[in-house]
Amino acid sequence: MKRCNYWFLAIGTLLILTLTACDLHVGSQVLSSSIVDRTIHVIGSGSVTGEPDIATLDVGVSVEKETVAEAREEAASAMTALINSLKASNVVEKDIKTENFSIYPQYDYTDNGRILRGYRVNNTVRAKVRELATLSDVIDGAAAAGGDGIVINSIQFMIDDTTPLQTEARNLAVKDAEAKAQTLAKASGVTLGEPITITEDTSFGGPPIQYAAAEAAFGDAARTSTPIVSGELTVTVNVTVVYEIE
Image (cartoon, rainbow, N blue to C red; front, side, top):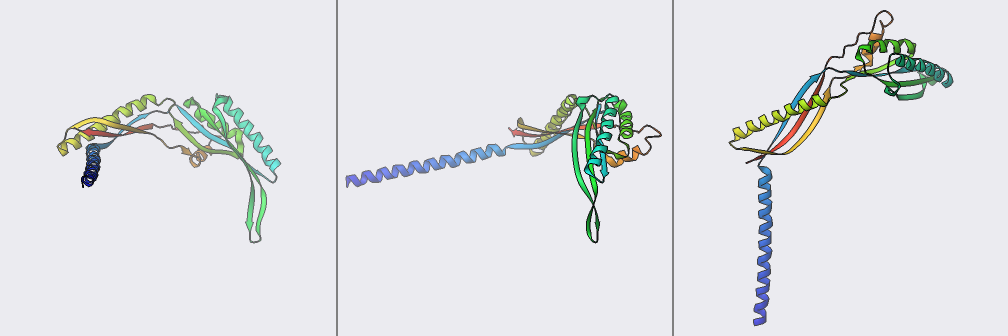
């Protein structure tokens, strides 16, 4: 009988310890959830504009001939003249990079099926122009050198060093986030605490001038300098901040 009592006592003690451990675990989860929920999430934004000081020009040639050899030869000649023109306009060799080279068959489609018309060779480079005052001359020179095979894909204006603008935009974004968090805290009747996490996302505004616009400008290249307007670029920083509620 004594032995049975010992067994019952041991089993009861083990059951109490198990239930106590479960209660502690549940209590820990509730406490953790409560702490995590006592936060305010806000997104702050700051934007600063600046004038571009460099531009990248995607330019090249596209030639179609009856044979690959003829198309490649004419494209090579036109591209060599184009690159020499870029260098003559003070675009240094390290700022000229081949972006694409391709050869494709060209077909005419008839009721009887497709008929091989010839072959097209495309060759384009990306040139970085560091002196914007010379950009019009660079474009006009490239158009003249490339001849009827000239292709302009885009002109992209950029700011070489965006660090100062990013710093200013970042400060504005953080102030914006804090102001929003303070407003939410006051409206909710709570006290805003310290930021727990901060994440950042930066974007640069100002789309490239596409080929269609550039092609229209080239129509008068022989009579007058191609007009190019760089405008302004916008640097935007967004920050996501999580504040603790005291």
